[in-house]
Length: 241
Length: 362
Image (cartoon, rainbow over all chains, first blue to last red; front, side):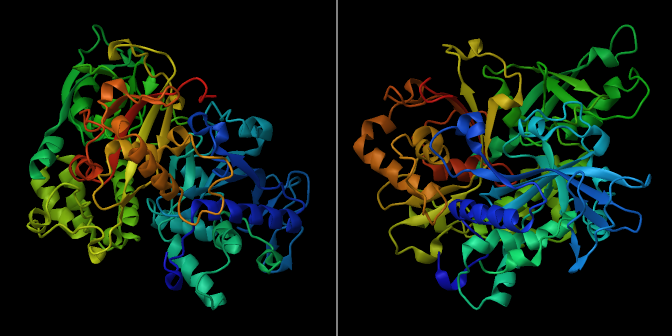
């Protein structure tokens, strides 16, 4: 690869290194959230050999509440929200109980490397609180066998207002249901084909270097992708270690 | 070039479609529908032809159509020919499928909202292939809506002439042939060669969009007739990685090389776990050098006919490899395979049955 013209993509091994850096930073800065864990593709039969690096990042059982004033807040079950909305603490918008109109949803997020586009891709699915399954079950590939995870049209109502709008306008090119590359089941997928372009712009704007530190790739990437599904990241995560 | 492409586009599978018994409300039940399905097409596209056969007998409700073969719900986004090649070890003609109009298995299959879903699945795959080949998807993104529609309609109607017309704007290119002389290539002036900018350099690199379906055969069977039916998609490993070709002067990159490059987990047995940790390139490249080395060491291995598979005891054995309904020899140059047998969305769909020695499987 020509160093002077970085194209905004990363290799599979850069992805796994960057994913580990991201997970560590997340753990440090979001102690109330569940941690992102690295799922080895080892658990997928045919890939079960020496490829120690291959796998994906997983964050499961995250509760996201969409309250009446169209504000999305996320929290961990039973705890107050840590969601920072434009650097403001908003601890009261995400209480789980007491409001009948607030329906909490649970999200599972997976960040998977696309060998075609050479960028990370966000896969997710959502399900209702009263149908919440223990996370142990979920990570065990015991899928919601009766198909009670939300369809795309239901997910639309859980997304932040702006994402829901884009979803309506670009029905087939923004978020679609596709097969999870490792679990072989339908998941929602945020389309990656523009990712390398905006990652390039993002890095060029901040750093005047030809090839940025790949360790930070996933943090920067998630700072753009996370808010699409209502998951912000604290500003501290973007700072150099 | 054209001739092989014509065969691919004319390819069709005779289907005998039965309505699932739970949806039959009339006596006697409706007879099965006999339909010729284009290989490059998709099952939901046949619905306008199939629906009239069964519409009078359906129970009340909203249609959510899906197909099934021996209990396995069929993925509508895989081309019909690929499904047939993958699921019928021994080709069954006519192919007996069951159609359901109710009870969509949404936990297993991506929802299908008719032709629009199929069309956008196609366009998104086209974009993915464009990105692999050209490093961006501008060719597809910059296509006008009407050009996209024209291209899509050529696929729906399996009309090769219309397809050649509307896909010429895509610059999807061909992989440079290993065997053809430069002059014969340059005569096809509409085709762009990948890597033509550096023809003076000895090693050439090209990327081929590949979708590989691997059935890891555990049971031993002699004849394909004895192959057990595939009863769950979990038995199929789906590999969606671009194939990287690093060609060296005087060497031919074969279909066998391609499979080994795509499945380093199975064929890269000499690889140590610690290797490749700081690998800057995607992992295909390292395997690549390895494979070339193996070619040098064991020239005899490569030219073995398909039937005998590989000779080393603990090597996985390729029991069957099918592309577009044919079983190409493993020593066929990948450039020929990619240029002639790819699907209209520019992906090469390859079905392989592999028997992994027990030591290597889980």
